[in-house]
Image 1 (cartoon, rainbow, N blue to C red):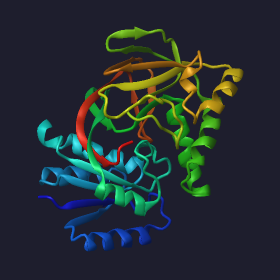
Image 2 (spheres, helix red, strand yellow):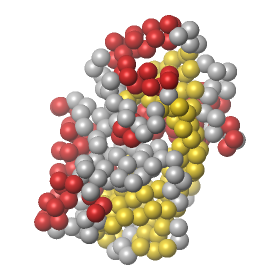
Image 3 (cartoon, helix red, strand yellow):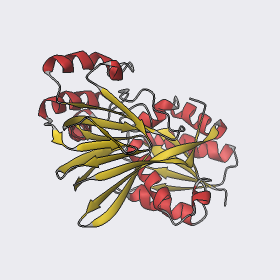
Length: 312
């Protein structure tokens, strides 16, 4: 079954959706490309769709949406009843339409939908890593997969505030900057322990932490500039409660990849990160907010699926 399966999020970057869909369907007809398409109707719908697609033999999926829609589809693929060998044959691509579009940014994909589709149909399938978060809720183990990034502290609070701006100014990456500025003043340190590949890190009260499979988050912020979703490790940055002066020092470096060069910003790299805490945690996984209480583990699943894109 080699049909292309297209998952469309009509709420992601609403403007120009009809024009983009028409162009895609016309292009598929010109290419004599057999396809099926699906339109999401609620949060988590893309997860259900992607799971059904791959469990019924589908191996090529194109996402018309943002990081959240891509993340939902990845969760469907990773939670499907497939062997690891079969899952590694699944090819996913994206025509970015969301607010941040951070995973596509690594592959030089942007909102130019004609170019993005050309790159999908003429791109190369790259084996990529997937992050896996494991945590307990009501005594039961849960897993959440992420393709781009996972954030604690300031990161999820920024996403929360950015989402609240969408009804007023639409879906723009500037939402994250406004959300960040508000979150910086609201976040309090979280008591926790952190270890990477079994080695403890010197952390007492965590103000923010970003664990990246890709280098970008928050609409182009390069929190983890050396992260590469193909290398088999996760990269991260964290810091404890900064002073106002330190915040002012860090802000100009958010987008140029020099953030982790500041001495009070700490870096990590490894295949497994363990967080120890008894506190309630709000986290963001690819911009999607999750809540739970207690410890968790984040692992890198090496070359779990394939992503279709040009060379980064």
